[in-house]
Image 1 (spheres, each protein chain N blue to C red):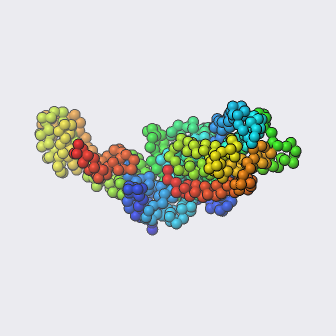
Image 2 (cartoon, chains in turn yellow, red):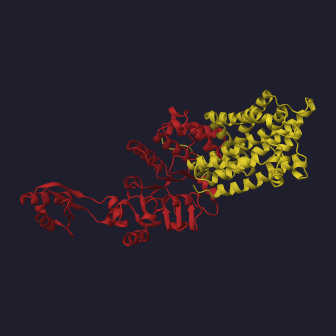
Image 3 (cartoon, rainbow over the protein chains, first blue to last red):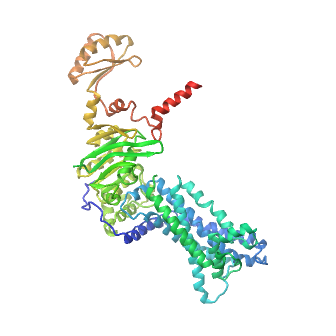
Length: 285
Length: 338
């Protein structure tokens, strides 16, 4: 082994915003490369929601009442927005486990000792997760079309509305990965992060309008469901996709679901990004 | 003028445990300081404070002339850290790992790529460059980790137990790398549990226990503190202990210690090998048969033992609480009340 020859004695200082973006992209690239090396992780992430689609459609389909009908075809169209939304939130677990793993392996220490932008490790992770979520959502939409899901109108002018729906879904998923980032930084092991990243998602996604018509819930539960940030996105997607089951309610998020969805998601990003980045800076693995 | 690594009165507490209890360090530029101590002594905490990973409760730290507490990001540009675990992404190849770290040190993508190739070459990893680090052996991962710490050839390096868990051959290899690095002018702070390692690599040694520096100096100075050379004899027959003690008293410069059950006698001496020969002749003349005899110079183990009252290998569990006298007292009380 030859002696150190390189003349670069200290690293060049970097600008602030440009550096943030650049560092985040470097970390995002690293996480995307990891995904290609562990394709089974991506695969399982796709199989799970596909199973949900099949089970809910064929097992529950005929016995669910949406509005005044129990038609399985109506339920199918109702269901998809809910499954899509649930799927994007499950990215939380991946982010949590990934960051907890980096902590445990000492990689977070390495990153923290480098002259890089403070939030970049977490931003890079969430951006990579967003890419994975997009892939999952694309596959899921195709499966949904195969089992018979249709948007309200074949009118091509609706394409914008449909894309907007998927945009809201991705924004929701992105927001939830920041919750995952905070969980990942707060637990001791990747295993704990996986469970910690997913357990609370069941009540959040089930006490909502995603799988059943929330207007048929008992009043107190209905209030929770209607103000659940998750429900706003589901309601918004049903509206934008022209699918049945749009909840008629006095609750503001149900009346203005697109706005509510955007506001909730942005709020989650702001709050949890702040908390997670602060936690990262103090991280003591 | 303070050295390349300078610390004054570093204190860090975790709950009730004072992990650092007023640590002072001063490492002149281009030298190696060995931070020696058992598990839980505070070595890692000290490294974490100096490398901006942990904020000390109080005290001052200056690395490469930059105040660590005031300008952590400037410090990060001038240091390389190789932690206790090989912190490489195991799903990335060696090349990808180094490329990533280079970019995060704010090198341009192309420059980082060139540097990665150089480092892979330097650390004998060229053949494995495009395999994921998952397939690497422990020694290779360590080398990759060290390469990552050297991407920008930082003037100040920190290595936290760099050879822990390595087999002797890999340890030797890594020592060579470290020596080369230092001969290039890098200032290095190295923590280790291996006394041999500190002896081998460090210009100066700080012995740390319970968050305090309990001794400092060169390896020779520390050994001299513990006392000079000794003659050690193991007699074959227990009955000869008394006679042998008498013989040794004639040559010794101090008290002869006798371990009855191992039939081992030790006496401090001056005079080296010549004196040893005389001792052997005298013992022989008296008809004392011996199993073993030798001239012993103090090892860093002896130094450690005499300073701390326990061997470096005796690992305090986790945070060092186990060795705390209060805890022991508490255990005794429990025993007594039974």
